[in-house]
Amino acid sequence: MENLHTDYDVIIVGGGTAGLTAAIYCCRAGKHVLVLEAAMFGGQIVNTPEVENYPGIQNISGFDFTMQLHSQAAALGAELKNEDVKAVQNGTVKTAVTVSGSYTCKAVILACGAKNRPLGLENEQALTGHGVSYCATCDGMFFKGKTVAVVGGGNTALEDCAYLANICEKVYLIHRRDTFRGEKALADRLTKLTNVQFILDSTVTALHGDTALKSIEVTNKKTGAKTELAVSGVFAAVGQVPNTQAFAGLVQTDAAGYIVAGEDCQTDLPGIFTAGDCRTKAVRQLTTAAADGAVAATAACAYCDSCIQS
Image (cartoon, rainbow, N blue to C red; front, side, top):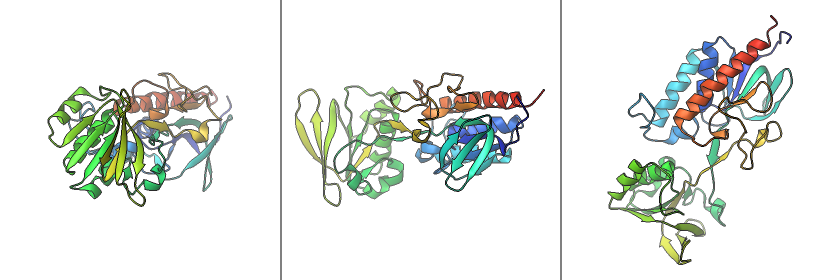
């Protein structure tokens, strides 16, 4: 390939664990790196009060974990900007287009993460911020001493339930199956809390309230029986939707919108890689996001080197 002249060697779309890890690895390889993040650096983990499953770190808050990654990337020379990438244009030179301008590079790493999946109920959007929430650590204190419900069965739901149990009078944990997908240790802790009640094999089928949430309708999937629970808040933790809409026409995605790539983090387009929760994979954890960031960065650096005329 000819020696390309671009603004940056690598542009990373997304400033979560995967994106910031990729930035660290690219900078250590001597590359000129730009990280573009639409919202808050750190992604969803920034709102987690305690991270206890990252190897080598016994206990740390999600915020502190993020700040350390951010500081490390910045200290190594990565440029970190809060800009929303609206499109990536492919070619020998690749271009990231934002609201305020565009940036060229040799390689792109899409590490755009995922966002919380809504419950899909009537009234949900209108009641969001008025009893419906997707972040227990963000909004939990508004429900101090009140009765709330958490919907979901993964680690996020279990962690949210434990967090809210320290604040609220009562917490219902509603899950559509009879067993939890989350870690057994987390579920076992909840069984010891007297103000937590499990409602299994059930889904939330209605939200009641005009200007604020007053109650929810819960339907048992096996019997069809409906129960109305008086709650002031409901916290949805029912999975994620990848933030890949802007790139659906660029790289191959699966039916759920996740970017198709294997453990090598290579998309179907040369020079465009993906990392973290937006990638097709079975496990989405901090450790796998960091691993993806390292793998994608190494591949992106090799691709950049191939753009330099020997």
